[in-house]
Length: 267
Ligand SMILES: [Fe+2]
Image (cartoon, rainbow, N blue to C red; front, side):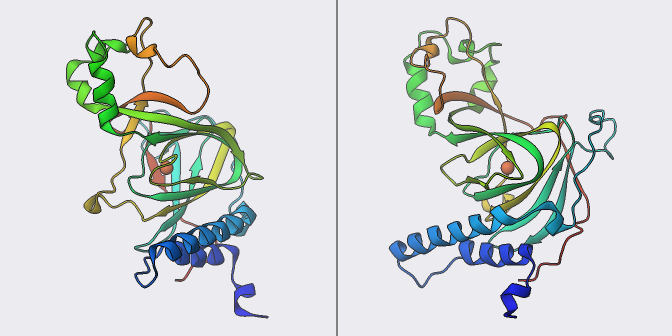
């Protein structure tokens, strides 16, 4: 049997992720774009086939969410690290029943997320440039921070961001992977729906605060009744322009670690 057929599914995925995301300085930009897309398609196809049992992970039973902060040994979300290179990181996130990974970004990164068991709801946002926010502010008579419900404190104005709510969807074991890129769906919030859930996660390149890729958290703001910003937002369909506030990591979210029980990956 050829060597590749002997490899585990997760090994094939890791190898394809490396092919897709490693930097190759020897090809032209056009060639690079074409082969990148081909490689993403191959990776997506491999991810579509992976199941929890391929990683020796059994679906968890539903249980109550842990009490916040006071019980740090019982986190609402845990992470199983599988592998990491300069090009990508790969692991499994496990969400307890009712858990949520709050809205966060992946600066300059690509991502692929494949549900292994349970069901998650994912809202994806695109970042919009800060110039748009300044333009909107100039167009309003009242101070920007008073346009929201509840109103913002004046120092919070610097943490305001414009974004586009790009997609809202539910994903289960039978769904294909959910993709994000530096400019599309780069921010997302992930909620476990109707019980515990787990997903395989690939980030490329990995988070690295020393290289400008730190994780930031955001809160979706509600516009106040009568806000001048409501003009042009009458259509609630997606995509839809929204306002976000950058916030510290929410106190009710923290992520613990647990050992990965699946086949070893070597690169
Ligand atoms: Fe994420």
